[in-house]
Image (cartoon, rainbow, N blue to C red; front, side, top):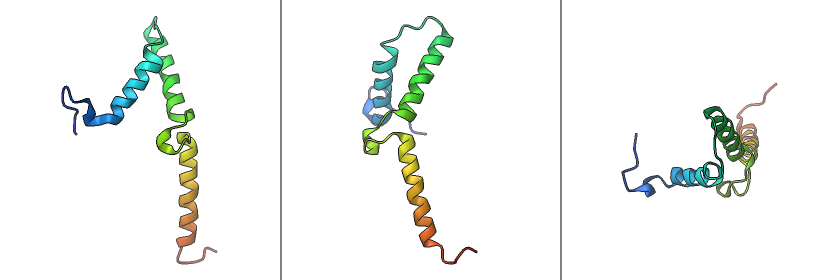
Length: 87
């Protein structure tokens, strides 16, 4: 496993970008009173980030839209490449 070297955040720019978004959009805006409250709010933010929010790296699609589009494309390719006919 490769780790980021101390003082070299660009070794893993993806996680640094995510950490910055989490800090700016969730952690800095919320004062958590209990650990349970923090877990609930961070989980809601994570679900929004991973499932509902459009991502530039996915051409503006949400991750679920991208996954559906990708699965549909793969299914079409698989059907075309079958060397025999299913009965």
